[in-house]
Image (cartoon, rainbow, N blue to C red):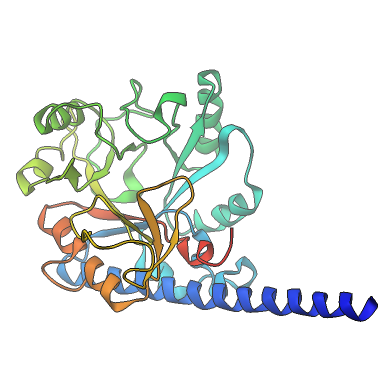
Length: 312
């Protein structure tokens, strides 16, 4: 019996070590992917902003806070976006990631989008983020999927915002489902005083134009602002322009794993050349469409896919 238990323990240890090795290798590949995207974009426009969302461990050597900043990654990005630091429905501090952000904020701006179910806690979330010098976008109960423009702008101002470090607030509106037309959607965005507007390149399936984006770059109060485009680099979305009708899990082979909770998404082997060619490197690539539309930068989602490919 003891020999059997030892054998099981050895197998579990072996599998755990193998999983850790794969995760570490994937982390390095994601760091390289983000850096290459940044190099491509900044060759076109040195002021183009690169902001990865979540996966902040990648800012450190070997994705380990104890090993200091990863200089190549830090030089490639202009800020960090994170979700659910102080609130994830209810008040629940993510102390591990908060410790990382305390170091990162000395180097780059931090954009936090917490999910606050009870509206009475929104002011507390704002206070906690502001106290840490994080830009704050609290999502209320009816805004979990980034579908609403809040009525109140945090730290509203008339300043011209030309750099990420100058911003005092931001709007994260990923899903325009509440708007019946592109013009209604754009007019709603124009009629705000947010310093940063973070939106999708598309309204439904229609690509926003350079004229559309230019019309968003001035706040209602006259100040200039930044307009940033969302782009998912760690998972493929089956409603995007690049999706082919015969694609499904493992076909092509780099569609690696279902994304729990999001039936339209699949984690990808993001180091695969076919996926990377979709994202950057040519005039037909996703990020080139964003550049051509006149966005000031891109918000890279699911960089933490390096971890979830091999872990729950």
